[in-house]
Image 1 (cartoon, helix red, strand yellow):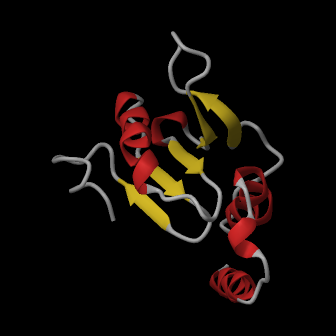
Image 2 (image 1 turned 180 degrees about the vertical axis):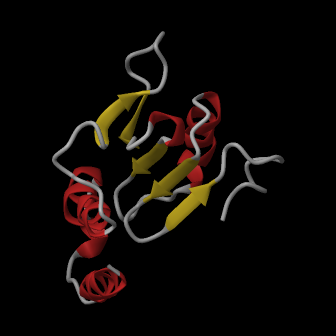
Length: 129
């Protein structure tokens, strides 16, 4: 798995036109491939639930993926286009994670990957790694 991931990262580093990937392209070309390399069954909606509703009161509030091999260990992944500044989305995404008590939150534009531990103590800045 590590070798596959390393090879894919090297492939991305040499890719031309990467900076123009919009969100949909980033999800298809980068995010899904990485989830697959990490062992997630990308064709099983019980493992990877796309467009997961985070608020039962508002069906428009969604994260791109809920990884849920076990529902008590759910992981949220929010993807943005490669050139998007993640700072602009951090607070909204973290609120989704904390309100849903997920074990791990991942905010990414395919190049930068920000990880959060919503169940840990402290501010969301302190829970980021």
